[in-house]
Length: 133
Picture 1: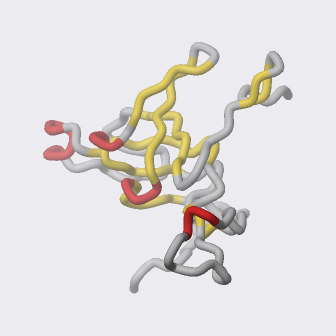
Picture 2: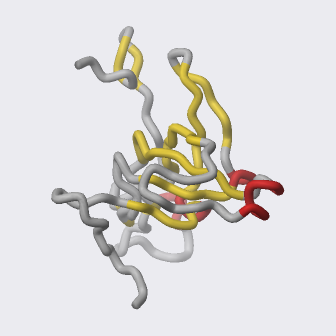
């Protein structure tokens, strides 16, 4: 199976703390989450499947002086993101940027605009990655 994001000598690279999502507009998600009617009427939230993500938020070099941080090169370290490829993400519609790539529609969303992620485990159970009890 060929990679749709690496074809025709072109690569689609998601940068920073951005997430590329294939949107799904449904009243009920595949995993059983019902979107509230108020959210659907105002279209404040939208859901979809994460297909790619950036490396995360860049971290400053711990050895750099605070006086002139632009003179030092980035350390290449990033704060990792919670979103993973295949997750179902519910996000704020207003912060999403619609794009089209290879005749498919996607949205690019900053990680801070993602409200929740649904990730299924290997045996079909929903994985708890830091949820509050």
